[in-house]
Image (cartoon, rainbow, N blue to C red):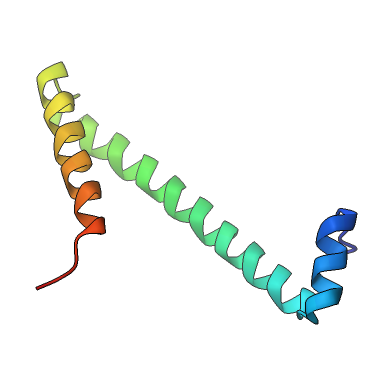
Amino acid sequence: MQVYLPTDLYEFVKECGLPASELLQEAVRTEVRRRKLQSASRRYTAELAAQVGQPTARENARAVAVARRIAGRRDRKAG
């Protein structure tokens, strides 16, 4: 397999002496893992919905609010 990089990325990799092969392998591994987890999440969600039913609009709105609140906490420091 050959991988082609746009000129700007190729030049940056060369200038910085980055290990292109290792970087590309890690990027592919990360993407494969992300897609597997995404697929597993979709399957789990479908199974859960089949067991307990689809969430109501109110439940969805609450879940979105909770997720936003949690996401906002990332900016805070622990302690």
